[in-house]
Amino acid sequence: MRTARYILGRILKAFLIVLAVAIMNFFLIRIAPGDPATVIAGQSGDADAIYLQQLRSDFGLDEPMPVQLGIYLKKLAVLDFGMSYRERRPVSQIIWERLPPTLEITASAFVLALFAGVLLGTVAAVNRGGVWDRAATAFSLVFYATPLFWVGLLLVLVFSVELDWLPAFGRTTIAGPDSGLPTLLDRLKHLVLPVLTLTLFYLALYARMTRASMVETLDMDFIKTARAKGIGRARILFVHALRNAVLPILTLAGVQVGQLLSGTIIVETIFGWPGLGLLAFNAVLQRDYNTLLAVFFVTSILVVLANLVVDGLYVLIDPRTAART
Amino acid sequence: MRRVLASLPRRDWIFVLSVIVLVLVLGMALSARLLFPGGPWEVVGPPVVPPFTKGFLLGTDTIGRSVLAGIFYGARVSLLVGIVATALPFLLGMLIGAIAGYSGGLVDDALMRLTELFQTVPHFMLALVLVAILTPSITSIIIAISVVSWPPVARLVRAEFLSLRNREFVEAAVLAGRSHTSIVFKEILPNALGPVVVMASLMVATAILLEAAISFIGLGDPNLMSWGYMVGASRTALRTAWWVSVVPGLAVFLTVLAINFVGEALNEALNPRSALRAYK
Image 1 (cartoon, rainbow over the protein chains, first blue to last red):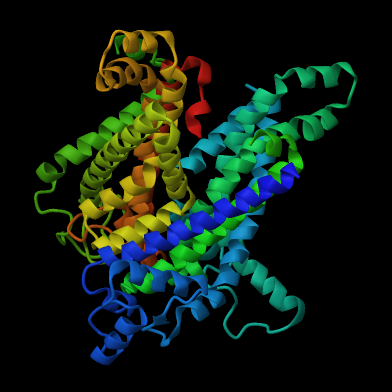
Image 2 (image 1 turned 90 degrees about the vertical axis):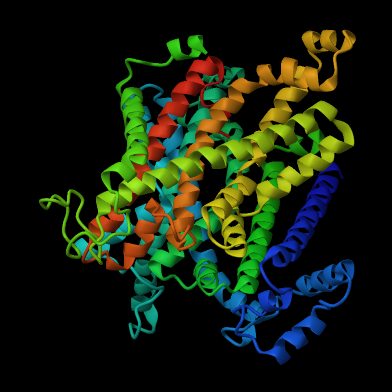
């Protein structure tokens, strides 16, 4: 019962955040220079008068502000972001096309970074002050300070330009194999560099966090008790300690999903990966605010959803969570 | 202040090296006009001259501009953004955090929900939207970075205020009939500063990285040479002129790394017991 109420509360909160982002979007359009109609049309200046007039009545732009907001929210509720002037079709349609490639690289990078980061951080915490610890710390510090775009370009320089091992552009080879195992391999090869670029930064973050959290947990009394009871080292580490140490990491991971999605703008731009990030980049170049804001809205929803998942996991790992709030 | 300086690790070579890097960056920023009076956009030689050629220490880019001049002028932008886009969100976050933590109740609730909202949305995405909408310039970049980076400061300051608000020395000040402003600024704030200052050093690094990424995407100030812009503008020529992308990226990397190391040393000097904890 308590858990159900906790989860419901979280869902309500998630909904309120999405609503707030929608309202934020509404006001962002209005601080853009020029008539909101030209902003919504994308391509400021190029849109013709009849189209602008239609937008004005569609979005009720001649009505008072609260009415405008109501109309806008109603449209966002059914994910109607208007038309892309550039591509001459609904923005939502483009977003649906671009979503899977972005989820592909962010999910891969997220899972990889989390596993490798937790492993690295644990190894560092166990060998506190040792060679492994210092190596892990150095690794984290270095990648924490490296601009994402620089990592990406260096990887391209080494693995594509110099060694010619991996493709540096796109999601598949144009006119490449079109079925079976060769296609899969081709897709995987294209995934490596963008995913690695995204992974390295977050890996550094999670490793740092895990180390700090593990060091603290390993000093706690229940670990000493477990040791005194003669429980095996690996079991203490991965079952007893990690379960407690993982909570702050999970929180961080949830918070960082937004930054991971932001990172796709850089990574997809470098690797020509046809996802939301590249869509945002092109929207920036073309001053297509409408598409840009749609991408912002959709990625914010993804972050909120990810945080809901984290909240759920929290209750699973530590049932006391629901009781505390 | 003197005590903090004294406890900094003067013998730690990484710390010393970091300070040297930062002094060098500052030196480059200050001497750019003097050493390269023609500015960073001036064509000074043939295009695509590789580094370490006589007269072109770091080579030239695809249209013959000096990469070294770009690095010097880029230092100005990075430092400016690093300092201003830290100071602004720092003050804003302190103000919001102090009001929330000191007043509590509904005001606290409302401000914290606002903070959460800004922490949830993808930062870089929001910054890009803001710069694009406000039209790219150094001012809009600083505003955008400020808008996305105040929430952690607000949360930290609020937490400090909540824990300090009920201490005896604050109660004594209340009983003495001091005003709210006097209590906040003279009693609580000085005691809450330690962890917040450490956070500021990390914010400088983040601000520099954000500016570089914004300029890389092509939304930098069109009148100012920045490291991120250099990398972004030359990335398509990676095969023929790799150094034009690699060198400015290295400059960002070293600067940010140095700031992080100095920040960590500050952390250990100011909050010896909670080393690394303020990182969240």
